[in-house]
Image (cartoon, rainbow, N blue to C red):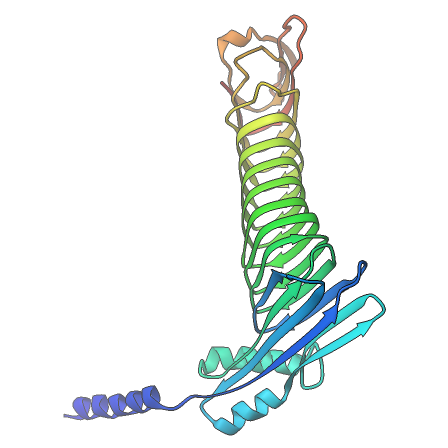
Length: 357
């Protein structure tokens, strides 16, 4: 009987919680500026999304929507009163910032939002931007705890994002992306510097890119020229023209290498499944990892391979010669001597395994 009574009481309170009214207070801003040739646009926001669209004229247009929700109406009103958007223009710089309690970077508001999201999901604030921008300007976006969407843009773009996703269409110009967490999805980026930490990256195509990453999974369909500084990542490259850089505890899986690769890895695996007909050179230094390389079939490359304490699998068609450099450390050199080679492979492998096929 007592158990039934307790269940009835709990059911009553849950029902009251479910039907409790949630109050939402809102306000909006509309602002526009004439864009000049060298205009720089800076947007700084928290707790909402920023969406950038091409402008149909020479004006920059802002549509900003602010909202605060709470079970108590007066608390929703108070929270909305503490939120504001500050617009300013100085010479060629247009600055737009989200303001909390009169401060752009307010620790008190950050702490309040964290505790509210953890302990009471009914409390919520949002500041969402729709920005219409003419092509060719310099665009700087900083956002936290929200997403950024840029459909198509021609011009320099600098995006700093934490706690949200970045979705871009086609970016032509110099692009810098700095992300912590979240997911980056892009269709095409012309010239990119990408700094990511614990981020999922999916990009269809890039012409030129430098990626500095940690704890990320990076999938790229096509990239012409890629330079990396990697720690504890996984790279899935469907097709790469040129690859250079280093990796620590990282895995590189390359389906097709077109031109060249200069790479140094430690405690990570490298798999190059196929080398294209325009390939020129591969220089790889690897320690404590499993390496597998699909050798070109059209012509035989010149191969110089120095290994130490490494398990090896070589095809007999390579006609390797070998030298013993140090028996105690299992240090050997393997090489071939094709006539008039145009492709070159230089490998220095310590530990792990090496498979050529």
